[in-house]
Image (cartoon, rainbow, N blue to C red; front, side, top):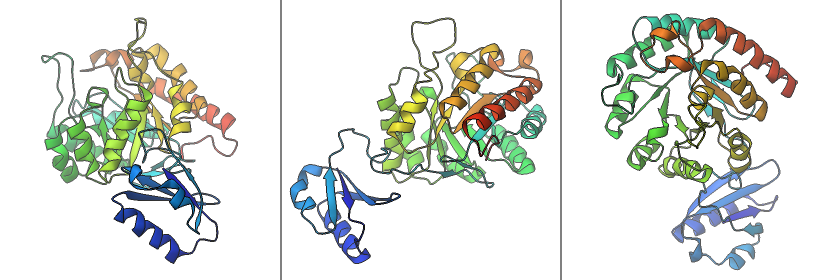
Length: 342
């Protein structure tokens, strides 16, 4: 349920309304729209008579919200959320960012790759220190040592670091290391204890869509994080599993505009995991940009044939240079004032 307040509502009256709502056992989520103040009621709204609420002097109208996700819902928060990822980098609204780097942190080649993606225009550095793998015998990542390499590269290049967290017990380690953005991958998209634990922090969370997850389930996963107090959630479409076998996953490009319609949270697209093949990454990166994504996550490796994981979908630095050039052209076409990452 949401209450749209009258334009002339004074602060004292608003505070009184918020106190009344909270005494009823609900949370009051306040959002300032362009022309109106919106109060979202989260909890068991059967405790409140909507007609009584609408009869209050400062209330313009009351609207029920049928979707189970409340905090992530654009109806509760009409303006786009802008997430501050550190190092002066923001995503959402008019801010478009490209997250790039290797699938896995492998060692000293990380800094070489990081320097190249930064020079090409990437604004955030990705790399996996902890790797969820289908096979228990596959490379699982460098762990804490990999986090150290990532943070060193991020410090040298003044770039926010995005890296995957798999275990609720590692949250404090990530905080201690200073990780800028904690990524929750597709395999942990409904790991509810992990979602709750990262929700207790204020660190931005890049939440990937699960391999067989609906859009509503993705938004409910975001709701788990936000319900614990962390509003800094970035949604990521990375492909879903279908009957099609010609690509690693099926890139649900529909999800970009749908998520932007349903939610105020930033939306990022990952064409690397979505397609699984280098030759398809650039065209889908361009398509996602044109569809309105707030950012892209792209895997880059200086020797893909020697990569310890996912080399088949990695761009070389030269390919990434050309991809960034084309992304800028798409941005310029759809955003007359833009064209650059901002």
